[in-house]
Image 1 (cartoon, rainbow, N blue to C red):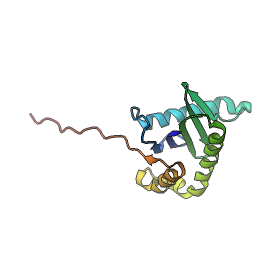
Image 2: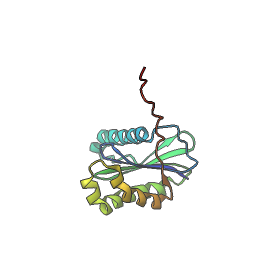
Image 3: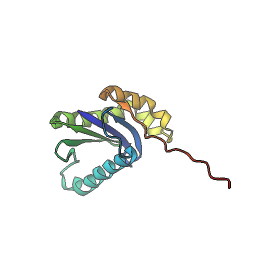
Image 4: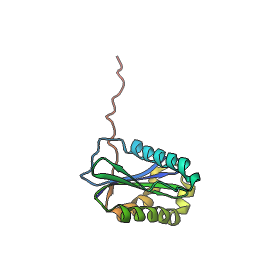
Amino acid sequence: MVEHVYLTDSGGTPLVHLAHPSASEDKDPDLVASMFTAIQNFMHDSFHSMGIGDVRSLEVGDRHHVAFGRGHALLLSVVYRGREWNRLERRVIQLVHDLEARFATLIRTWNGDVAALSPLRRYLESEWELLARELPSPAFEAPSTS
């Protein structure tokens, strides 16, 4: 079962986060996405020159896995439970390349406006049958005037 989908640019800027309704919400999705990007970039920098290639997945604990897809401009990280890693790894790798082809102009010209990513977000939502999840905004307190 897929619990989270994180899409970042190659530098680690979070673009889209999708989550299963039952998935845990206790971590900042932007922080998690950036951490996955750092892991992928570290592994790529450390081992790619040795001909080993990119990291395709990680096992986390007893039941969770993270499948990674690396494109030229995008990184896709999918957190899931279960034993479907080979099929899911191939799907994640294929999907990141599909996203870069399908949304090349949007990715290349993106100016930081998250609303402009809505076509990309909707496409990922339909691919994974998950919905985007926003981090709850902290309550704003006006400064005291006394």
